[in-house]
Image (tube, rainbow, N blue to C red; front, side):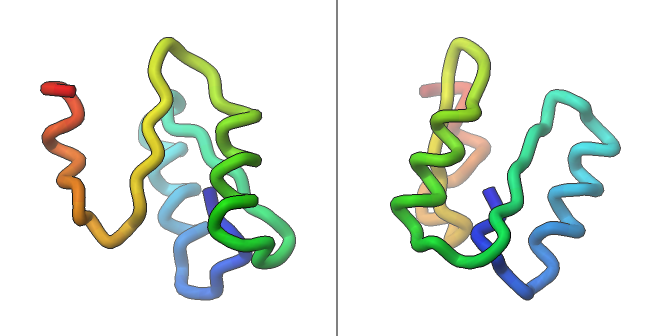
Length: 67
């Protein structure tokens, strides 16, 4: 979920998607706030499991398979 950032997040998401079509992303037209971005992402999510993680890496992504 790109919440109207201007830091290159959208370009990175586009690259990730191009390399792996399982990677999906959304880009909001402007910043609607953290919680609104999460809700929008959850509403569009598909799959058996949906994980919400902040970009600060407080929770290491490599632990997801264990979860």
